[in-house]
Image 1 (cartoon, rainbow, N blue to C red):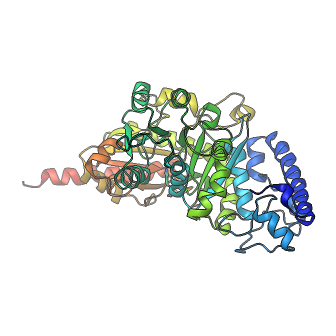
Image 2 (image 1 turned 180 degrees about the vertical axis):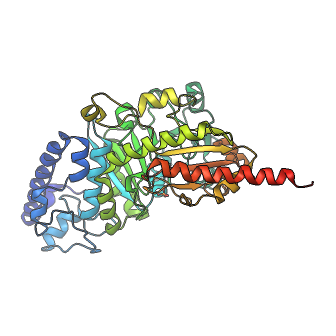
Image 3 (image 1 turned 135 degrees about the vertical axis):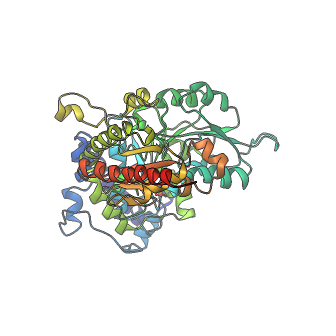
Length: 480
Ligand SMILES: *Cc1c(COP(=O)(O)O)cnc(C)c1O
């Protein structure tokens, strides 16, 4: 940013206009922050005033233009110095993306007192990268070359995140990756952190293991060392859990998943509170991480999201809470069915009392505004579950191959039920060691329960499981 007083009167006039635009938007933001979650999801920050500038369109318009026209050179100078709201070029910013980012910041920051900003990215993986890479810069006062910086992360994480940390950061850049094997064990988090740690990262609930951790306690541990806690809460979505309220600094979302349950787009987001904890980086990074990322590293790396995708996602978001409620209730029915099935070895679903994760999950996972329409707060545990099939990998494949309605795909978060075998898909490339760390056995089926009627989902599982039993009895009657 340049010094304002060095600008000509013409440029200053645009800077003044910019201030008025910021004020108008921020008073609208304050008004929206007073509304309920569903209202925010439906409207975001796009109100009547914004619509006036868009021919009165009541839906956020898709601005597909790569670039913005400026009224004159003064306008261009003010905009490119980041001294007035503008978007300039769609790699850097775009009005449709702006509405998506503001909506995500409002939803993730629901119930949080302080300021929250967001940066939308082209995928969940680019969000994990953009949320972590800024902390890995070389610092002037770097310790001796022998002491590599390290990062502390839950081993129970998404396969892509495991590969980014272990391969790209660990092997290619020489960072030490300290995996927390049991995220429920607070002593393990504390033991891994030292003076060379750059950030603390956890996924909750994790994909595919449904592992959880005590966010508030881990945030405390990270903050004692002035480190940010970064949480990937893709599986929960802000409809069920908002880690900023429990002390997390930065949230990562794979917006491709439940946030856009239709499955029309790949997208991600970084949502951060202002004034995060960190030992490294410039002041702008600390004071407003998402905006810093957007204006600098994101601009230079270029993982921007298509405005067309942003519009489809905005449309999906409007009904987020209702969908997460229905799909969570369906998943509970399916989990209870699977738990009593003789062909099933183990069901991982934080909603089941038999699950080791149940107590911690029950502290954090609530249907947002549940008390407003159900009279009291209600726990909801999301629509992802995992189950292992008795008889090993081959039998699990038979069950999987027998599904007739539930789609076979490496996908989740969908309004349509989808199943996958993580060991041969999302977690194929990690090898046995990585799969063991992430707790991904070869007979695990990951099931994303959709919004179909639960009796039909159970019906499909039932016939697939029954086929195994009958084919096994055929095998048993055959001579060896
Ligand atoms: C899918 C997923 C990602 C990566 O998101 P993409 O949009 O596929 O790049 C990251 N974290 C979790 C938990 C995921 O499920």
